[in-house]
Image (cartoon, rainbow, N blue to C red):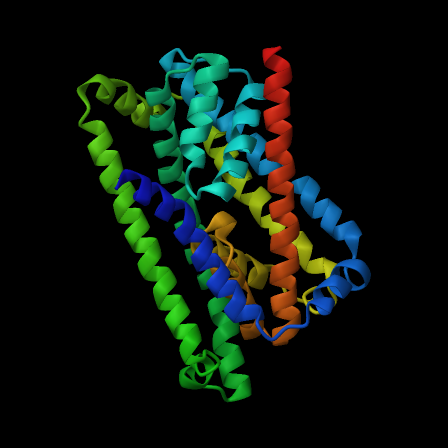
Length: 324
């Protein structure tokens, strides 16, 4: 039974991602994808996007190190970075396993308590969740006047706007929301069960409460904002790679980024499937033609996922070299 559960955890996210991607790209000629990568795309912007994409992992590592220090746990910035990069890559194989991977990596290579580091990761998730919710609210407030003006100038009502969604689109959206909620509930239940173990409660809870003892709280929050700023720039710079998306405004791109960040809550490898669907839908809403929108989502996600793999490989090799 346990083996079946492990198999389902590893297989179902891939099946969900493949089904959504198949539904989105079933009628597309993949020569268009190759042409977009080899001819249409401005690689200078993509390379800049990839360079910026390294920064969130570095900021996350520095922030994590700050949270560990007040508990008497010290790990070098280098090991923390390697652990972060390795955790991102491992989540491509089994979604959401990255948190355990990076805590285990720090335990093995820096002797940091697993339960304490896992507690700090829970705190990180809370901080990140609050930030993305606040940023999304700001994005909606900023874009609301544009949306009202758009509906007024075009004579489009809410029903007409929602009619751009097909019945299958509504079904995919509902399914993704339900799966994300189920995943969050299961995660909270696991944390509760984990805390019931008497031999780990103290270290785990100490890790959760680590934020109270951080030596420089403003710097911790600055790192947190830097993480999301890096994620956004990593995404936004890719818009300039294609003529069809280069004209999308900064506030619009920020709202699309926020919606895409929530889509990643659905446990698929690197958000594959739900992220494509969310970004494509928002781009179409902002006037980008459907085909360029789905090509942008596919190309951007594919290349950025390749970066995750490369950084994970770097982290793994660097840890091996450091150990020797």
